Length: 414
Image (cartoon, rainbow, N blue to C red; front, side, top):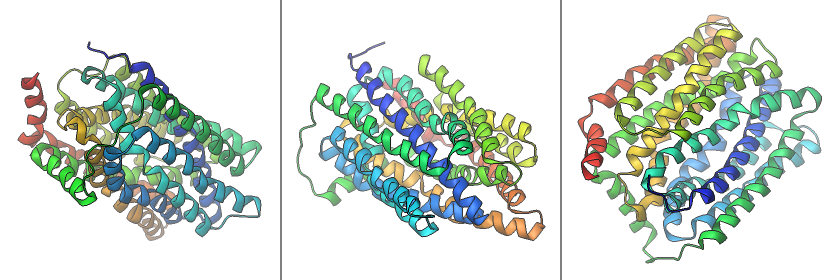
């Protein structure tokens, strides 16, 4: 396997993101429990998630352009460091009394605005640091870091909430930002800053990014399929917690989320060690199809053991899908356009999350009232419907010739 000696630097940067993911997971879990206990509404939880996610989505495109024009490691440091401001604001509100729903929404929105700088720069930095042969292994480790907010954070948060309250979780999260900024600074010093290239206009850079995506129909189709997938995954993500909290406490929820996320840990380790070599399109379609089936099983029963079983399988299938998506897109995009391309890809593919966060919570509340069984079973009904739709849409990947050609053309190019 070809290497350029930068993998240790990637591991340092990845370690910082792993710590950041754990801290963010603590805040997400704590605020979710706090809001549900105060309001008893899935829609309120979804609103906070939407307002925390929307700025990141909207700003991902300009953030991608910035990542191609300025020092990517510096942008990561600014994004990580300043995103702590929103969490600090929420903590101050809680120290002065109970934080209102509006105050929480403001805090997570401020944090998300600065976090928008991080994702395109981080993904583009991976391309800066690593060789093509190392992409798959790096993608597995990135998925593993992303799983930390589901694997470690819930069980840690669940136990901490039995001895303290959400303010402790917020304080820990704020401390993690310091470590992530330091890791980005060390990597920046080790490889030097990115020299600004030709100063193109913002709209011109944006247009170039769009043209790059349109250059291969398979990439554009894959982006829009991903948007549909995120719609169904978003419904699962936002409703899993109220589904469990409707019949269990926060400690049980934390343990359940950790058990489920162990599936992602197992798959992430396998991919981090071995990676994938071929059949990316088939694996992508199959893993997403199975994810839909496991979502269906997750919502059918009000039994914590069955929920953990299907949740484990659901999370185990995700790293394979993420790995394949990452490889198919990354190897078909020019290196000097990675930032703006990933900004656009992130924006378009995650539009489904916006729809899910806007609709799923209200749908769960409405179905719970309609059936007279409460918000928990309403959430379960939405998860079941989303799982069926996800399995159906995943099959379209194998039916698309242009998506299959993304892998075929790359193999022929090699």
